[in-house]
Image (cartoon, rainbow, N blue to C red):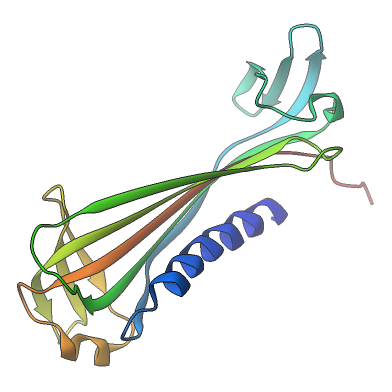
Length: 193
């Protein structure tokens, strides 16, 4: 649970930093989509320090992985530790008209954070995509805005605050911020009661 919270906080910080730097002129519609998924969870059952190979076991069986040089604090991994990989997604929509409408665009930033020296290994990678999308349709009865992204993909956004839809119209362009994070974390086993 602690690992999921860390990923959620990191995604929120990334989105918050974007909005702080870009100071939207109107309120943000809110998180349109949010999901978290545990991709893998297992227990460390064997460690080969010479080859940096860690063998993990979960309900699906055993898996061996080689920890490359980017995995810091390898010596901190112990038999019995937990290894979890978690994926987090958050999409925030700004219903603010773009200053210079025209073609749609997309900008991607990636950041990676690793565990401090002496901690169990862990790494969180966050991708933030900022795009300009075209408003294709507005359904005020359902509080839904249909948007077309820079690669032609259509998606619908449920707007949490319907007042935000008053200042936009079909064919306007709005900002979309999409943040996803993946965390791979080794943790000590839970204390037995």
